[in-house]
Image (cartoon, helix red, strand yellow):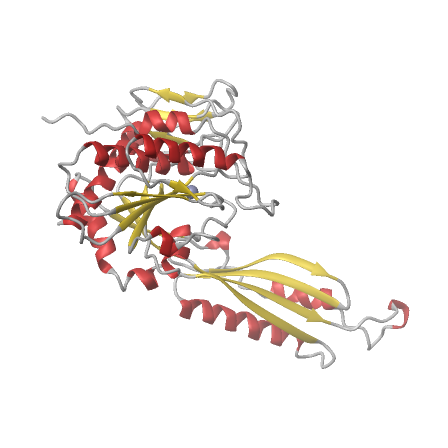
Length: 414
Ligand SMILES: [Zn+2]
């Protein structure tokens, strides 16, 4: 029996999580926090040390590098692997103290710096797949940063492996590390042309074997209800309360479906998240989500006619509707490049995994990149309970992800 594949991913990971790289929604600079640059610069140095000589960081903090092709593979399409260094603003990422729980056997993992933080298999069914593996958690006070330093460590470990194993055939392979994914700005200044890859993969997903190829298509809608104010003592027959129109509109939204709290899987929703205003004017802000643009249009039409219905009895009242595109389902792009998924599938199978395709009920940097001309599905990195003090990953999942990266490079070269 061949021993399981091991890599430098977990030792790198244990080091990278000690860098505080929290991003900041309120910041107007780019990257949003300067501390992200400390790790990004560190990665440039480590890439150079392993012989990836063109590793560089640009003015925005994007790290890009090239693993040169093996002889005879210069014409293979250029592919890239991308991960983000920042961690969520929701939970502290300062002073992360990672703990490796060796040979996990289903026991409760109590995090020592806050013993009320207990990772239990009963609450985390995915832990059942991890018996015998080494689980990594934080110590109870912070998140772990597996989202997405697992991805960073895996790409670094794969780069190291490819650089020191010239017998493994591959074409030109690009590496990209980005800031500010958690605040929705990870691709804002990403220069697709400079990156130079035809296709890419983000490593930023949870479960071993999963490939995420679909995400929500998303719009934001703002509906402004305009009423008519008058002195409330003398308002009979004259006042029209925009506040009441807006409330009536929200009340008439479907009660048994089409909402975040009643949908999952492939179902979309409409989500009023903010209401603001008074008698003259009241504003309702909504999120629209669906997996198809057609479904999104239907939801927009439904909301429009509902708002019109609400104001119809009041000729002096009116509405104003603004709909703004947020992001689109990357499947629209990936369907035109089936080879991207084919190679991920072949690679997973080659390393003994059963590829699973999953949809993301949100957006991803990969979706944005796909529409910027770089088709980019998302691969598992082994990150679980993200944005939480109970975040965890496993050494073996990380090694498996490294194997997948190497196998994808090999698959494209064949
Ligand atoms: Zn992430």
